[in-house]
Length: 168
Image 1 (cartoon, one colour):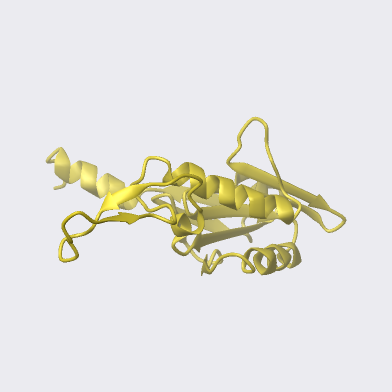
Image 2 (cartoon, one colour):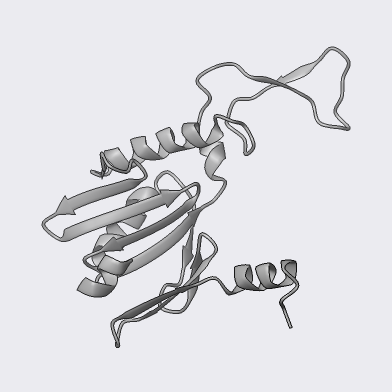
């Protein structure tokens, strides 16, 4: 985001709906049936990764990486959670953290191309980055006119002040 601010690049942020449910299990995993569905001697077989499974994040990352590669993106060697795409239109970089995507690109057209490609696979919830928006618990406020970007955590600060009994 700092690079986007310095070079006046476009910032975008999305959430992917039910991210972990997109990853397909590559092995058999059985679970006890939930309360109300308990049938003695019966268990359920998971076909997809669920939140809370130790391997769910890895399965989801593999699924997303496969889709991004099909759209021409490559993961950075130094950070496999960051993907780059270079074209005649410019460059797009995406940072992924679970189901949150934050990215920068040279133009809105690049974002629209990426969004169209991603929506072939997943349902997105877009964040309006023209006004303050949240990413990973941080409030991001960008002023393109002044060339500034502010990161803050007002909710976290309030929680910590109350926890330490310093709120008043």
